[in-house]
Length: 112
Length: 116
Image (cartoon, rainbow over all chains, first blue to last red; front, side, top):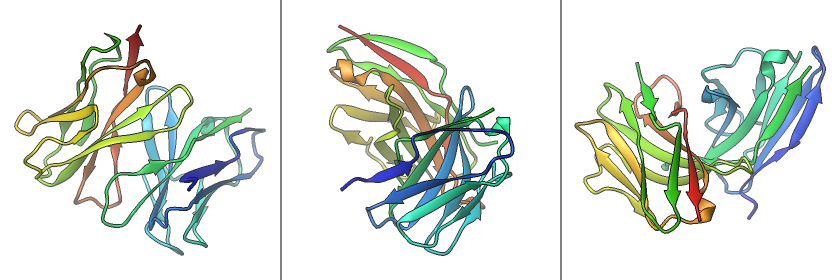
């Protein structure tokens, strides 16, 4: 039981490049989330999903897209990376009927 | 506005002693949940404990307990018998139950260092 895993762990992009971050969970959780963590800002919700095939915007969705084609996977895409997207990205999931979220190990992204 | 305040940017505690990490929250909602998460230097966020606003008993999970004082809007985390592995950032968070989206508000965190 791996819990929540994220790929890759580190990435450096140049401004304007695109990339996709992959999140996978093996707990059969309905809900999945993408956050970014910046110094002094805490965690902020980018997008989330309440089930397979659904996505919704969170607090800071601009510049990001997501897809949830399979229940266990939640992808975060950056179409044209900007230096302001330099951050640590966390994926999380939770079970229906529960409120605690379980987090992945994070992806450290640097955009130069 | 809904907000979490953690006034202690950094705390030190002697190994085997108890420590309290402060958290106050601001909400006009009657129904909400409160959480504490731990983030060690390795970076992952680890769920520690949850308290619902209507729960009458304070939540406990092993060495962690949540001192919930609803009237004061505080949800302090108490760690008993501190261990070196408790050194980490600790985040308090709140989930209002009636929101336009599935929203959890995180505080800025408190850095705890356990001294041998």
